[in-house]
Length: 305
Image 1 (spheres, rainbow, N blue to C red):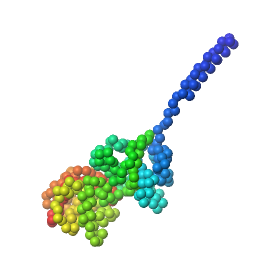
Image 2: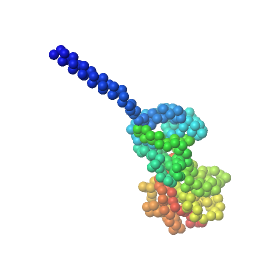
Image 3: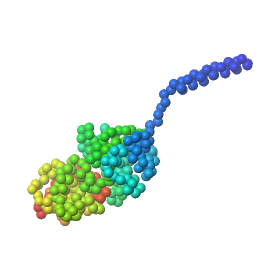
Image 4: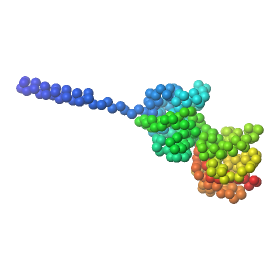
């Protein structure tokens, strides 16, 4: 019995050694990193990491998510000129949240040609509405609110990071219009309607607290619009595209007065002017800090022009 017992012990020992040798040869499997861990391990993001840690958002980006993060590099923070030390913790947190899309992964191959509006995690719009980010693709080039995506699709276990070359700041309705190509003619018109008294310019008016709702003609609409207007006439035309309040697409009234004093009538996505002109809303609910923008397919002309 004793010899048999020692024999079994020897055999079992060989099995143990064999399995140990196999374990030593097995490849090491690395667990995927969270977005917070990816930022912490990348030397390009030391400023971003410090800001995340000071606001507690590093903890948030360790959670399951999913999240899409537009991540400014250290060079991007320098280029922006933003003094992070001058911001309160809440202000810094809101700036950072404007770089985050919560609950969705937006890989670059899902970004369509043209403009896509996505909802950020920043809820500092009127009535705590979440602010929009405008992602624009032209061929292989991608930008967000006019800032270049310099590297896309750094994948984490809980989302994706896109690297950007500047810092996203919560935008007014004018800032939103200025950030995308299809509204460049509108921005030019706002500039052409400038007045000596800054408080009476369209840009000056729309940079106030608001809130405002802007029905923004795109470049194609401006190409077909009346020309030869004076600065004062152009200002009246532009103010005819603005109503008071943060009127999102699910709450558009039957009619509303514009900032130039005339009314617009609404039926679904169709707008009718006082002169009977009909215009279609083509893109809705681009949310800024002081109002919301809807794109339309024609320039609306007031009845007195």
